[in-house]
Amino acid sequence: MQYEEIKQLGRVLSINHLLSSFELETLNRENICESIFKKEINEIKKKTVLAVVGAGASSHANMPLGKDAIGILKSKFRINPEALQYTLDELESVYRFDSTTFETNLLAFSKYRSNNLLDELNAMYCHRYFPIFCYEILAHLLKHRFIDVIINFNFDEFLDQSIDDEVGIDEYYKIISDGDCPEHLLSNDFSENYEEKPDLPVYIKPHGTASHKSTLRFTREDYFKMPIDIRTLLDNLLIKPNLPLVLICIGFDMQSFEFNHIIKSPPKGSEIYYINKNKPKPEPKLDKYKEYYVEVDKKNDLNSIIKSLWSEISGLFKQNYKPRSIDRHLILSSIFKDYDTDTPRKKHLKRKYFLNRTKIELLLAAAKSKGLINMNEVAGDRCGKYYDLYQKEVIHTKKAKAFVDIFKEFNFVEAEYGFELFRLKTEMKDNNKFDTDKIIIGKKEFDRWINEIGHLLQDIFDEQNPKLLAEKGLVKNISNYFINLYNPEDTEIRICKNTIYNKIIAVQNKLKIKYCL
Image 1 (cartoon, one colour):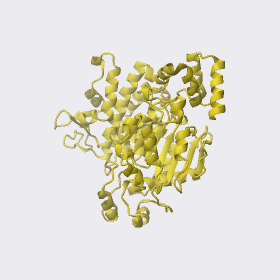
Image 2 (cartoon, helix red, strand yellow):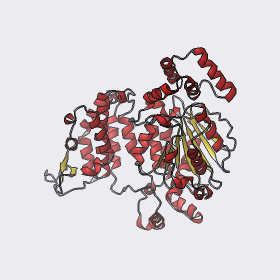
Image 3 (cartoon, helix red, strand yellow):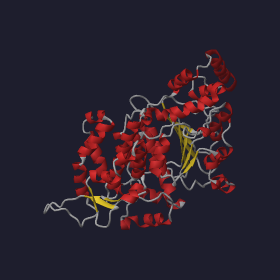
Image 4 (tube, one colour):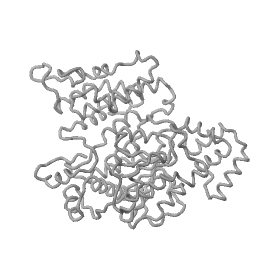
C-alpha cells in the first residue's frame, strides 16, 4: 500500500473538515490547528474536495461489472455479433472510445435495444440495501465535510442508501436530474464568489439512477452532453479560481469525456488521487494536477485502503478533538458482509435482512442514547425505516413481529413516563434489585448489558451469515464496537457552521469542551 499517498490524502481531508466546520480567520488558522492536531500541518488552505465514484467501488457488492455485465446483456439481447462489433469498432475509431469498456458497450447496445436496455439496467442495478464498507465511510466523510461533493457514475444505489442513512435525506443535496439542482448553487452570485463552498454536502449522479429509468443516460448524445443544469452546477462547484480542487477517483477510469473537460483547467495547487486497480489515462489529459496513485489489489483491497485512510485521519487529531468514530459502520459491514446480491430478489431473504437490520439499528440507537429510547423518535429514524421495509416484505402484516416486541427482546422495559419511553433493564449490584429510578444508565451497566445480549447477536449472525460465526472473536469485536459507541461526553450535532464553534475553540483549553462534530 502507498502509505505516503494515504497520509497526504488524510491531511488534506482533515484540513477540509476543520475549515468547513469552523469560520476561521486566516491569521488564527495555525494556532487553532496546533490546538487540534497532533502533528504539524504545513499548508492550511481552503480547497474543494470531490470524490468521484466508478464501477470499481461497487466490486464488493458482487454485482456483474465490466465483462460479466456485457456478457449478460449480450445473452439477453441476441444482437447480430457482426453488427454489434461494427458499431463498437466505429465508436473506437471515430470517437476514440475503448471498445472493451462497459460504457462503450452500452452505447452500442442502445443503437439496437434502447428500450429493452432501460429495463435490463433497472433489473441488474436497482439494488440499494447492502452496507458496503467503502460506501459507508464515504457517506461518513461527506456528512462531516471531510468531502464536499461526491459524484457517482454508477447506476446502482448502494451509495445512495449509505448516504441517506448516514446524512439524512434533508441534510444534503441529491441531484439525479436538472430539476434537483438548487437554484442558489446555479446562480451567478455563487459562481462569482471564488471562495464560497456549498452550504450542504452535494451528491450527484450524472448518469442517472436505476430506480428512475427515465434518468438513465447511456446513449452517444448523453455521453457527450450532460443535462445543462448539472453541467452548470459542476462548473460552479468545481472551478473556483481561489479554491484548489482535490479529486479522489475511486474505482473510476476517468472515461467521461465531458467531466474530464470540465475539470481539465483547475486552479493552481490542485491534486488528483487515483484509488484504482490500474492508473487511469483520462482524455483529455489532466496534466495540471499533482498526481497520486494508490493501487488496489488482492493484498490491499478497496475496503482496507479506505480503512487505512480513516485511521490516518483519526490519528491526526488530539484526543479531545477526534472526529466521530466509524464504529457504527464497522458493525454494519461486519454483520452484513458477503451479503448475497440475490437477496433483493428473494422475499424471505429481504425480510430477514430488514428485520435484523432493524434490531441492529435499535442497538445502535441505545448505545448513542445511553439506554433511554423514545419509541416514536426511533420509529422516525433508521430503525423505524428498516422496520417499515420489513413489514412491507411480510405477506400478511399480522404475522410481522411487532415493533414493541423487538424492544422487549433486547431487555428494554417501559419507563414510568408512558408507553413511548423505554429504558434498558438495569440491575443494582449492591442489593440485586432493579433500579426503577435510574433512566439513563452508566457505562459499566451498558457494557454489562451488551455482553449479556451477545447470544442475540449470535442469532442475528446465524440467520444473516452463518459463516461469520466461524471467525474467531468476531462476536466479541462487534460487542466492543457497541461499547465504544457509548460516550457520556458525546453529543451529535448538525454539520452546519455556527459562530458558537469559534467560541468553543477560543475557550477550549479553559473549559475542556469536547469537539464532537
